[in-house]
Amino acid sequence: MYLYKKVADLQLHLQREKKAYRSIGFVPTMGALHEGHLSLIEAAKAQADVVVCSIFVNPTQFNDTKDLEKYPRDVPADMQELIKVENDVLFVPEVSEVYPAGLDTSLNLDLQGLDEVMEGAFRPGHFDGMTQVVWRLLSIVQPDYLFMGQKDFQQLTIVRRMLTELNSAIELVSCPIRREADGLAMSSRNRRLSPEERSIAPVISQILEQVKEKANDTANLGELSQWASQQLVQAGFRPDYFSIVDGKHLQEVPGMDSADFIVACTAAWLGEIRLIDNLILKP
Ligand code: AMP
Image 1 (tube, rainbow, N blue to C red):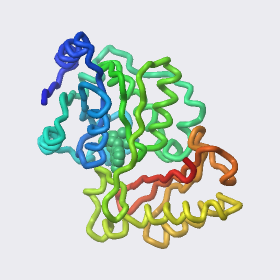
Image 2 (image 1 turned 120 degrees about the vertical axis):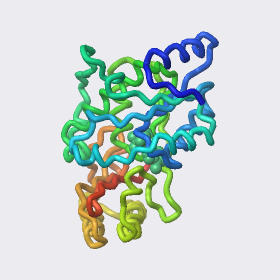
Image 3 (image 1 turned 180 degrees about the vertical axis):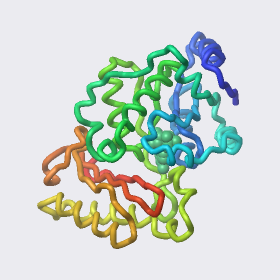
């Protein structure tokens, strides 16, 4: 595996690959890699000739400085995992490489309200930072394919909108959520859960499954969301939201007939850790 820290060095490598007509697949991450991330690398390997993974904990997308400071970082361990799955190129830039002084990397997108609901309502500025870093990394790597997880469903929807708005030819590939055996969606933040919190955490996916079972027999999905929030509270979570939304526009829907694509999305705190998860109710 090749490791680059500088944009210029990475680009020199990728220019050679592009001249040889090799397609590039890109997997951006913030590190502390788990099987969910590695499944993205595998999907990328199946579709592209060369796979580039980046590890960059992007400061501009953290609205909470404590969360940024505590975000787990372990690049040597990540490198071992990436070598095991035969990732081709790893890019680990410093903040000054991604945001060099004097370069305006801000974007002015019309996200059509996609960034105002759910995560956007609870993490002000998060999606501005997320779109800024994804677009900046895409401008550096210039891949053919971008691989992202359905785990961050709203992020995926917003990146899709960004690529459309910026007339990008990059193909966005959505990868399914990897879960632990007990259903907990894999996340870098899970390693910060106490043993007791870890035993409660899978309830979030169990409630999503129950919502899926009940959804077709429910006239009012708003009431079902309220019921799910109450279940989360009873289990010891502090939910930020539980929303059943149209998967394209991210607006809440009243019933299963209201849209072709419906997703239940939730974010809830367990102690100091904020977990997010979602389940497609109508594909
Ligand atoms: P992160 O390092 O959290 O920024 O995540 C990097 C990428 O991995 C994003 O596209 C996430 O959606 C994806 N990802 C994170 N967790 C999972 C998971 N459990 N299953 C599949 N993809 C995931």
